[in-house]
Length: 297
Image (cartoon, rainbow, N blue to C red; front, top):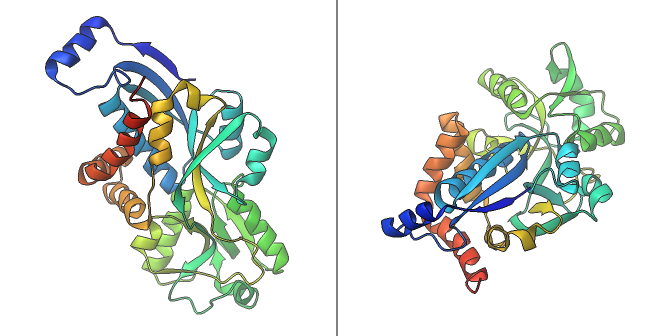
């Protein structure tokens, strides 16, 4: 849970003498636990906010990696304070439903997600039904395969639905996002066919020439919005950060750029720090919303 602890008078005085510009709201030590998963965009934004909040606003931020179900139960039980990625109205609805009375969903920060089966653009097929006739071409480790991420993810469940709905003679093999992307990179380097479960936003679409397979039955649903969410009553405990995160918005350019910086450096902290330096005006806009919301405190 978030614990707000005033800094010692000597520290506060030192900040004032140094002309640091900290507001009274910022001149407090705050512990913040963020539930994270290993999706590329989640890693990117979690590290971005950790750097901004720790290095500029006096927070002590802990990033706690967990499965999706554990993140939701952790927020419901107040083991986590916030998490930065819930896709609604469809993809993550089943994870939220058991806990919706004890979790607060806040404002959206990314609109227009994509979700589905993805292949390199050089692959001849363009639709999911065509996979049924071309299954043998998508061999992975000796069997026709759709390569996916962890089995507890929403996209994994939807992919099982797609296999059943389209009667696909392929098996989903679950791994992690990094393992899946390593396999995709290897296949592309050899110009071999591979089908993976993927989503937008993701850095892969900036790195490779990829295409979604058309989903005529709509198994994967329509585009959605990504929201941040929290334990109950977080907004009243930390109105400044709530206002900042509610003002936070990213698009394909800003989020894709952040993920690309991390991928290029193979280091989420180094990549996020460089992106922050290059996008100071954008971050200042988000922070200004927090200052305005707490101006009378």
